[in-house]
Image (cartoon, rainbow, N blue to C red; front, side):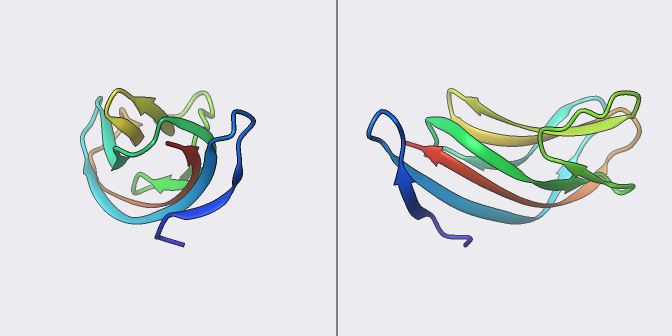
Length: 103
């Protein structure tokens, strides 16, 4: 669901939430461009999906080695970000990702 859903309880008693995100975001060459952000996330429990750099669907959190682009999820002081890093190109990234998290 693209709206936040409570799906369980984490080991510390916190509620685990799941939310899906999809759309298109601009990204730049040689910069870890943010394509999704959510300020309500304290810790990522699990995540998945893809970000497309214009050439291929890049599995979220996967760095395949000798390629020029990869995507990853991270928690920052401002919440949760999905970022795309590309050394090859810049443009618009299509994405579809899901995240399970606690607040």
